Picture 1 (cartoon, helix red, strand yellow):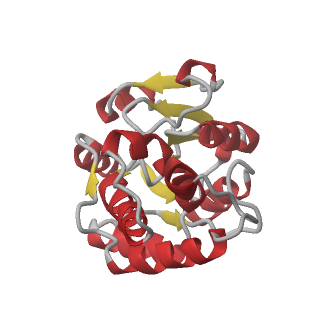
Picture 2: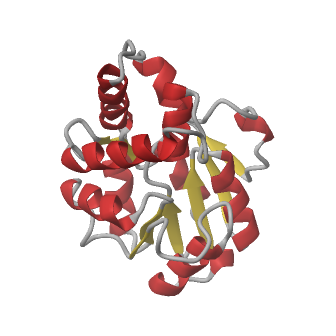
Length: 216
């Protein structure tokens, strides 16, 4: 039987693209750039601030101006964490079903706890989750297995009896390194790199409802 189901946050459990995109376009407006359309921003959301500043300003860590924009991005995001953020369709029902069947569930994200916990609180999930592991909860974030293994320890679950559901290649890499089932969420942001079919996921699911068939 499955001990626990762990979820990535941005792009898997919650659709945070609108709020993060609004911050990016606020920065672009302040620096004299036209706003980017949502469909341009969306694939980069799972890459965090680094990915968003990359698409928005063609900057990477170490480039001139990156650190200042990074700091402003985080400050602005902290002011507007959950304006438009919502659970993806079908997630609320899935979590209710997991609770009803006594299957633990939790969140493992590279988002730092400064932002993870307020988002989870706004979504009404903090007290329901068996574990919430953020990007600053362990020495190495995903794709290292450390945060997933920490989540299992907190939840009292065996990694081999857990599933990790995510919408990015690094999620699958982390799950496999942790020895748990790697489940790719096709409804997520998916990035702009390797196609989903080449992520070496154990399973690709098209909707949250499809997860029920994987529980054993």
